[in-house]
Picture: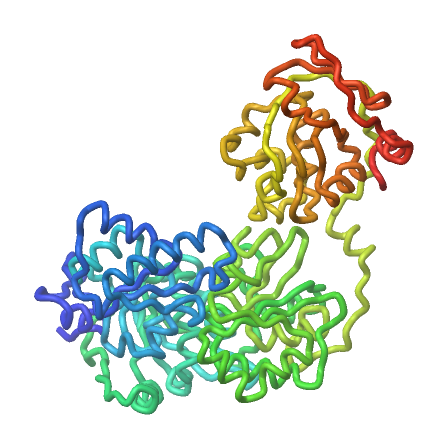
Length: 598
């Protein structure tokens, strides 16, 4: 009996026969950890005193958060960099782009090869007829230490794409048609081979687009038998003659699936489910707020040239934003050399550094509550790219929709519609409520004495929480970056009073550094002096503040104190002593009584 492609790859990397259903050890040609999961791989190796099997086959790729804009990602990247230096491991750092694309473009793997990564879309390597698998950190750690991991030999199915789609139909539209027919689990547990007239015409970029969505169908991998373009790619770009790999004529498939793509046009997935695919015509006219073009599915040159041809000489609709993120740095540079970056900028596009972007929640591409986005990503699960509603579609449809302001295709680009902030607020259910709450002019509570000067706004409310706009959520993060007071929010009680040193609230202008205390119910902050912006923010938001000389040295932590805002009198009931603060000014009192400046 003949062998399928997956069986041939496995047997070429194992001492065992690849019988479907059997578990065998497979040697791995490229072993990759990303900034997502990479630090855990390092921890596993260190904790178990494991060494690297072959540093030349071992790599880090930092693509989830190429800006290092998350403090935890930055810390994890640093851990990986230190480990790489000490173990002679190559890093494709935050300036390089998506690891699976780098693996192809840099020749880390070739047709018939094997790769594992902490990336659920490592099966994108099926585009070149190689085996790729996304794995957890334990598996990757084992591959790094031993050069191999176990796999169950999967059954294979043959997918035949019948016919040719419309000329306006992109590879993304075709894979959405596949997803529509196969559903979210239609390839569950299978390795699939793709055949048909259309497949033979596909470029490497188009094959990458389709292979990248195997995971969304539950598949282990979508394997393309390498065509002449793939072989030529390795010859021209890497000077390497690579092997070809095909299934035997008498290979055994569990089933053969035919998918009719004849004269099919642009497709789109409705929010929440990649497999909820309809013709783009069915949702045409839906108002959009933003667009994202990139990800491992559609960040290649072929995609970006198609987008540039649509955007050239046009502008993004008013009140919208289109975000474009090339898959790799080399693609970014090629866009620059070909003049695509200029076209994008003239159209009003925000261009990001190469990487995964919104798909990984680490870079541009996220959506806000009520926002409608059209995206070229491979997933639109609820919360995957923020709190908005995300439609999945082709780069061409995204570009056309952002020019029009509504979902449309490149053949039917309409004039931009006028943006109406009022109607959007009403339609999306954003509530605008007026506060009527007023504080009393006298208050009593337990003192938290923090005898420190120059406590800045990052210590009060760290910048990693600045995305929070709901005041009710803010309190839990108060002082969690102030040494010795990380648990303040858990111990503080409503009516507590903060007594503190000089220059409290220096630093940034963030309003949250005031609002977090209101969230906790802190009744007043008494300081020896305040940062200028902080003082304004507190007064304007009706957060009572008073200034009293050397007050942090006069009152003891835990004392019960009473404060009169009108007179500035501070009574320490525990010590039975009175202290004087500068009372509220008339302007301050007026703002306070009406509940804030607005």
